Image (tube, rainbow, N blue to C red):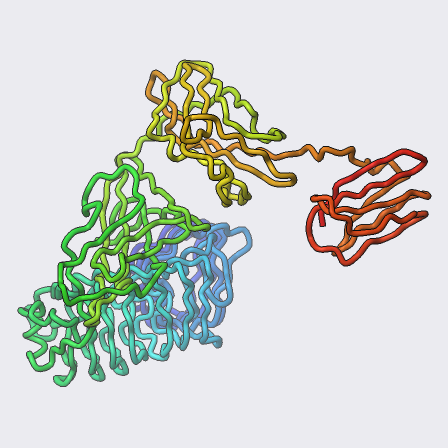
Length: 628
């Protein structure tokens, strides 16, 4: 009747002769298993008002052809349309919760893939780059053959590819951290590498995959549930990179073993030196002769700085010290390792917090020493301090294989946990500088900072002051060379409560004065924390820009049509009316004989540099400096 707004769970369960149904116009919900097993039901019009379709709602029904998801639909349960010969899905106009990309149905933001038609003619699927997860049963029993996943993809829900017997190819992004129950049970895959970062394998995740012959388990794996590889009758090789054997869930019936009905010839390969860790339940499955230590072993780490679990304010490096071994020499295998920093909690043992942006990390050893230093850096290579916010948990994942010793041992993957203690204090700054930022000056002999409150100086910070000749990148980083010359000995400070002065001094404490070159940029870097006020708040770093804008000559304005000077590639063009023209280098060397120009004339074959153009017209002399 029209008054019905929802249909109860399993309302038409196994109604095999139900061939058609008319749903009320105001229906809002189809609950779990409502039409489960309705083999004769080949089509259905779902009212626009339906907001939820429950788990396995149409499982094993006869729905075929195209199914339209209604306008108000907001929730699709796990396996809602599994084992139905549906060839395509569409989304009704006005639905803002789902979208169709290719043959698949995604959430509106494309982060979650919900549906793929089981009988779709296109069996090759490229998952959208925005997608991070596949919902339960999305490809269950489908005829998909190949799937390409984007880097950044994170999780497979339960039954994602269960019984997708034609699936023979799928890539595993390094970002994957979760595999759901039976997510790859019954596929046609011949090999599978579980990505680093996955910590547990759920029940029957690969069960009944008849072609699966090789499986690689990551060093991060700590737990395996029952029946993980049940019925994988072709499985011959299991590579386990965990130094400590993952815990196997207890089983009480023989068929619950994670390796039930796996060939007795299957071999377990483990890291060198770790066979003794694979005991107990593991030896119930693999005899000693079938556990082989031929994967790379791990160099023992004695200490880590900062220590795992510590409270840290600012992180500028991580140091790993390997156990002393006079015969071991280490070499860096990855100079820029893929280290990730996440701010936030763990979920099921996996870091799930926001990624903290670091341009890159570098790895270095002191020669062949046994101390590995990992440093966060900016794009131009400068150290990038990571301020860890007070009270926030951070997890830093360090991959295996950054270094190796001469026996083949490598560093083991580690996830370090820190608690932040950084509290950002309010900053204060001068009301003005003398010379001001971006000032045009001929000489530099120091900077005065003017405050509107009393300040004290931290002299130990003076060593960080610099005066450089160079350039500034878009991110505010200055690169260049020291501009102070041989006379400079150290930075000095004239104390004043409100107007302290920083100046470069020689060994006798006399001021070192620097003449600025023409057309050159200079930068004064005043280090952070050099001054603080009565409240203890410190100044930030300041970078002041100076240049010598004075040419010492009169510039010819473009509006002066009597003489116009232009530059090109290796040439200078002069446009004048009966003017005598001379061209010199900046050091006064003539590069063009005096000539009379009436109209336009060019002097070519010039090297890059600064030139002086002198024109004499009707007794009036004008000069202009130009750069090629």
